[in-house]
Amino acid sequence: MRLAAGFPRGVRLAAILALSLVAAACGRIVPEPGAVSNRPPPVAGGPSVPAVKTARELSLREGPKIGELSIRQADAAAALLSFHESCPRLVTRTDASGLTRPTDWKPACDAFATWPYGQAEDFFDTYFETIQVGDGRAFATGYYEPEIAGSRTHVPGYDTPVYAMPADLVRARPGDATPLANGRMPIGRYDESGAFVPYYDRTQIENGALAGKGLEIAWVRDPIEFFFLQVQGSGRLRLPDGGVMRIGYAGQNGLPYTGIGAVMRQRGLVGEGPGKYPGSMQGIVRYIRENPPEGRALMRENRSWVFFRELKGDGPLGSLNVPVRAESSVAADPSFVPLGAPIWLDLDRTEANGLWIAQDTGGAIKGANRFDTFWGAGDDARRIAGGMSGRGRAFILVPKGTLTRLGAK
Image 1 (cartoon, rainbow, N blue to C red):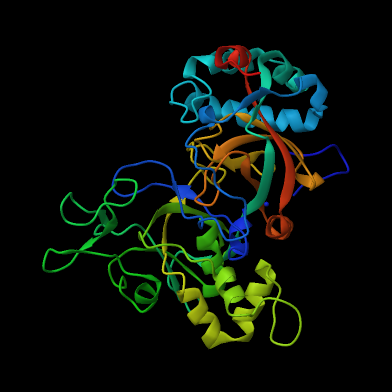
Image 2: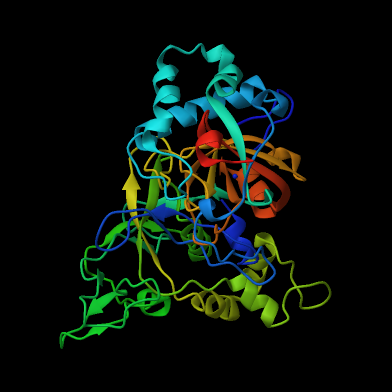
């Protein structure tokens, strides 16, 4: 999504800051397919996660008329294309938020085929109305797609492996382990004796627990950059021949995520003055590079490890299994936002204002009106996502007639 000419927006990084704030990616969970995330959990000082479970349990109010939102044509056109890519999922999947039904989306999705591209803003005015969930107060962070140096083969200088999902990473059978709080069985492995145990953690994997098993799909030059790519959950490997290999989240080792930015704060390393570092991604990276032994130990505080698969499409995939688009796609909590729905953000960070399409989820993206804006790849994307922390208001665009059916005020 873009603002009007002269106002370029440029990236998935809230996570690095919990690291200090929040972020990461989506993919499949073991053993059944489905969307999950490696994003870290909410951090102290962030927005509270409500006790309610879905949007239907909150107050629902009519928002402003679409025409009052002053949607720019360029913004609407980008959002329209992303909305169209989401349509095959919108008209078939159950909306966990309880706000919409698959059939509600069909008129708008069918209309795309003949709608004039140059009148994209009228499309949303014709088929949608806005709804405010709860108090409508929004908090938005950012994420991006990292690009780091990598190789498909193990060559000198590229010594950090990128692993595919191991076959022995499984979900425990009932009775073999204590169920999680949500009732599901934990993820781990069965050892040589047949006992179910936690999977290898970051330290064990870095020390070679998976070496020689044929799981390497690529190798990267910089282990620090790869650590942050794991946090994001997807990225691009810039190959020695100039080519690009895109990798995406395939799964995670089942161990909890620890935000190393939060660890640095607890240890008094974040702040100003001698021995202190900024709480931004850039500050965290600087600490790790300036203090190699301590930096490596810090990264190992995060026992979580992400496994990857090669992506062949034209963009990283979100939870809807469609490409997320720079400055058009936003992650949201599907219990409060219908995935695939347009979202209007009006924040104190103007570069994030405008129309987005909810196409992704995240472990830290929980609760009503909590969003993670996607900015694409490159240095600008990294910079914007790394500093994105916007507050304001949010409205969900739902098919016309939804307000009446829900009894919204």
